[in-house]
Image 1 (cartoon, rainbow, N blue to C red):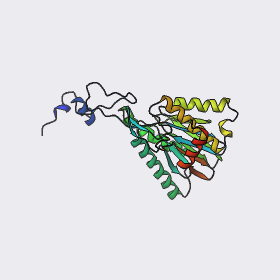
Image 2 (cartoon, rainbow, N blue to C red):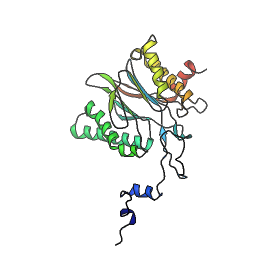
Image 3 (cartoon, rainbow, N blue to C red):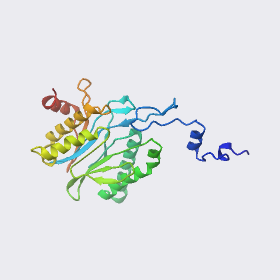
Image 4 (cartoon, one colour):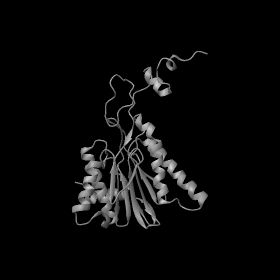
Length: 271
């Protein structure tokens, strides 16, 4: 049997590298670049989902995300769900490649459910947070190849400590606990600025906001991000597309219906 020349001529010996060596592998566009690599007519542009936020309010945690998913400068979808329910008191918000993030969310959901069924108890908060860290570390190989980047937020209500908790991550799986708020995605700088201003200089810091005021702040922050970031959808009143907004309290997770979001927006924010 003849040995392939690629394995004896100094070429790489892993299959993706062999394809790239012979010009047969599609080039992956740099994340957020908006342009294909030079000389690559078949460039692959990953789909990305942004922007997400989470902050603590008087009764728990609010988690929200706009609905837009983009590939380069193309709007792929304007109704993407970026805030996913993992269990009765936990949410995972996704920024990055939806295909990878949604699979991570499914793995987390099944892991928590399996633990609960086999151990007859809820997984500890530390276990839940580290489970997501491990999924991100296991995904690092794809991130290094330019695909599969996920930068999530994990929010939950800690039953043992009777307090809301918010964690954000880097692509390598490092976890950080947010004192008051967190935001990731391409529109996150604007979101963080709005939340910081509200938390520091307004009459009502984030943790003293009522649920309705917290929802209005989330809508305002995402609208502000949409003004300067084309990958953030904001509010589309004509198409009746509103961000996903979920609240986590002691009693569980509540999803705000679009009718309520539309009424709040029309009454308080529409110009």
